[in-house]
Image 1 (tube, rainbow, N blue to C red):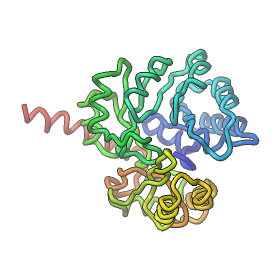
Image 2: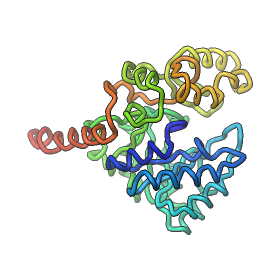
Image 3: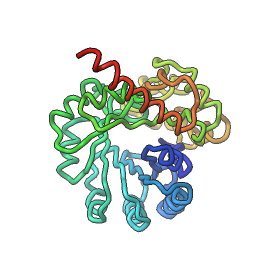
Image 4: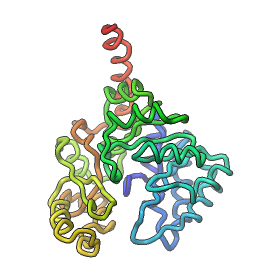
Length: 308
């Protein structure tokens, strides 16, 4: 949830009954990254008395974060839940577990999930190819990924990627998951710290309005299908593996400006999942979560028993 997962967003989700997550790399970049994260965690504590977590994404970025400092701040501030993602969490999981923190590792392959469990992860977020952001290079969707996870994992998991309604929650539970993880769906809430134009674009979009970039760099990212994304694809596939050719178009600052200043949906690449096809209105977090839960409960209580 880059440039979305601030204290306000995390608190709104937690207050609404979910588990809100602060995105560390949105606030914790050098030179004062770890201390900026500390401020964000403390701000979140003033906005909610409910549990919330912090995401640490270990993907390669232009400016290397101070992961040691980030972990230190998380421990010192008493955060109870951390979501790790991007690659093997070994570099951060040992100190987190030593501090008694509940670790959820997000991954795109069951073999990676098994490895994370051996390292000490308490829960897995199985991220299907439907997701926004980085779906990895496995190209396996949730409909196959979740049942395999249920068969092979010895720790609980949630389904992540492309989730936005109660039908999917009911299906995830049926496939052995403990619940679902939603990202794009929360971008289309009244509390999301985004320009209205971005939210409106999500509501208007269909499931066909995403595309992939960074395929030739083995760092695939699902983004909104706009003019900049299509330009990046054109340049990338003409220059496979050469990040320098597309770097000016994919700068994080472009992303931030679109979300926070201009609301221009076309001038940057920004992550979203195929769940944009399921989102047809902007709601408060509380109503969005309740609608998902109510729809799932209705399916489980009425539709499924009628089929027995």
